Image 1 (cartoon, rainbow, N blue to C red):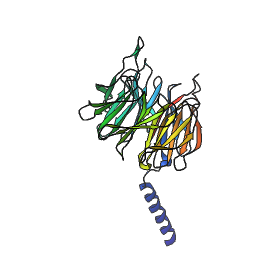
Image 2: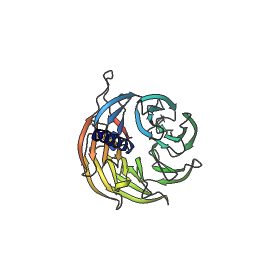
Image 3: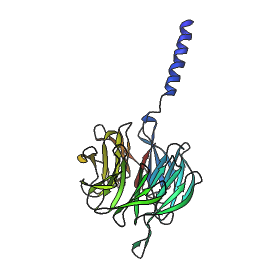
Image 4: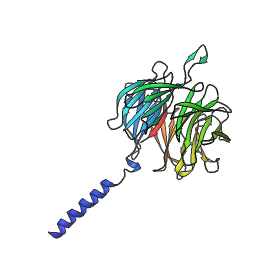
Length: 334
C-alpha cells in the first residue's frame, strides 16, 4: 500500500516537473505565406507537416510574430489590398486587418513598445515607383498612427538596438530610423538593389542581400558604416541570421541554393541546395533548424544547421477551392 502511494506521488512529482519545463522546439509551429493562393500554411515543427491553412489577404508576403501577445502579422502586398492580416496564433484564425501603405512586402514588430512597422514597397504610376514610406502601427488598437519617409521602394525592415533598417530597392539605399522619435537618422548607399536583410544582435551588425551583385552587404549597426561586400553567388534575395551560432543564410533565388556565411569572419563557408526559387528563410537556433520557403516549387526546405543538410522537404499543397499553387514566400517560426 505504501509502495502504491509512493508510486502515485512519484508520478505526480514527475508530471509537475515536466509541466514546469520550457516548451521545446518540437512544440513550435512554422508559418509560411503562400502568395499564389492568399493563404498561410501552419506547419507542426515536430511532425514537419501542414496542420492548418489560414486564408488572409491578396498576395501575402512577409510575416511578423509577436510572441508576447500570441499574434502573427501578415502583409498583403497586392496593390489592390495593401493590408496587414492579424492572426491569433492560439486559434489560427484572422481577427482583423489593418490598412497600410501601397504594396507592402515586410513588417517588423517591436513587442516591447507594442508597435509594428510595415514598409510600402511598390505603387507604380507611369513607370515610376511612388512608394517611399513606413506605416507605424499601434498593435493594440490595430491602427496606423503615422508614416515615416524613407527611400524609394522599401523592401524589407528589421530592428536592432532601437534602430530600424529598411532596404530601399528603388533607389539603392538603406534608411536607418530611430525608433524612439521615428525619424531617419542616416542613409547608406548600396552597390546595387538591396532586398532582404537581417540583423546579428550579438555582433551588432546588419546583413543585406544585394540582388544584382550577388553579394551581401555588411553594416556596422553602431557606427552605421558600410563594412564591405561578401560575394555569395547570383541573385541574392533574403538573409536570415543565426546570432547564437554565428551564421547567416542567404537565399539565392535563381540558383536554388542557400549560401552559408560565418558571421565571425564574414566569409562564405558553404552552400546548400534547396527547392526552386528560394525566398525567405527563418532560423530556429534552439532546435538547430532553418526553414526555406521555395517559391518555385511550392515547398519548404528544412535544414539541420548542425550539419547544413536538407533533412526534409515539405510540400505546400494548394487549397481544394483554389486554382493557384501556393508559391511560398514568407516564413516565420513561433
